[in-house]
Amino acid sequence: MEPIGFAAGTLVAASLLPQVIKSWRTRSTKDLALSWTLINLAGQVLWLTYGVGIASRSLVVMSGVTIAMTLILIGLKIRHG
Image 1 (cartoon, one colour):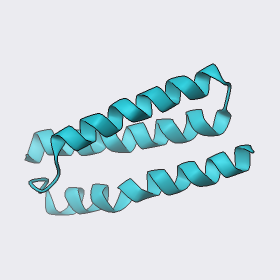
Image 2 (cartoon, helix red, strand yellow):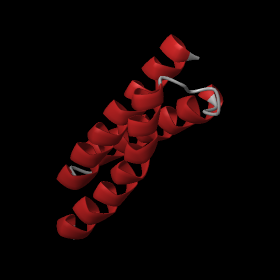
Image 3 (tube, helix red, strand yellow):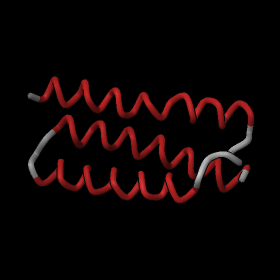
């Protein structure tokens, strides 16, 4: 089941990549809702906690990757608002 978890996590993390790249290149995040990124971050932290609780390597690793990308978006939003 872990390969399926890694595949799902990769797709979820990859879904944030276009926004990270666009925000980085344009230095504009005016259309990005800070509330969305904070809610997403909270959900990913809960997924990470759950993954640790059930000892799911795929859930822990991929939630960590998604948290990192969400933190980048939050940083860009704060910096370039």
